[in-house]
Image 1: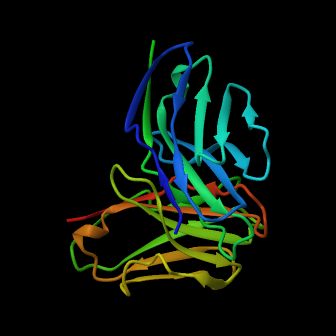
Image 2: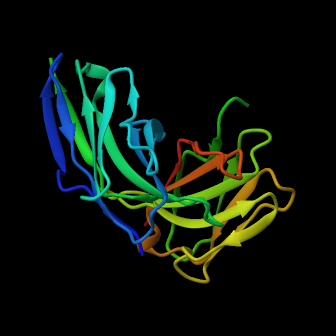
Image 3: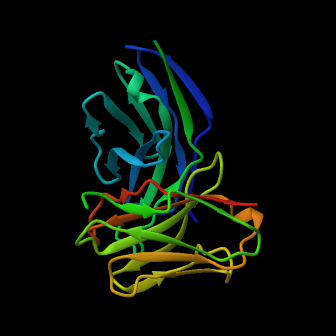
Length: 116
Length: 114
């Protein structure tokens, strides 16, 4: 079974600075997807960024980028130029490629605080 | 509507009561998921529908949990004889299906069993 581990329960960053959130996962599959979701107090999960395991190039979405290390099974999220609106719970998630069920397996989350 | 809609947003139930949680997915989305999120935890998969067919219910914690999607659109998650450990946020998500990658989430229903 696949597992996702987020070892940082809480992180803090100064506004305009850069922060990196860690995620590791365990799987025996060679093809899969990895995601970072943001969950603000409104509880709605919002997709931040996704990475296909077969792509070597790290995904980037504006101020958000990932460092995907397939051999190490590591998938960290870097937030550049942090903004107050980035404060939220961040979840790393795994999904099997081509599975019958496109279910997501989530980590336990990292609560990010942004200091003005 | 434009997004996934869940109702009610909050539900307080007395232990032993039955509850029904509703999810209205994005129009045209084939796939629908239910997740349970305990306090301070990540969401955990409960069940998955493709249209009206429930293809995976491996995450349902007990036979007190039942989900349906009779016409392939709106879904209801029913919990019978609620217990305190059922207290959680219940999230619904929908996607286009197939290899449609992005799952869109609703704001969830926070269930508190007292």
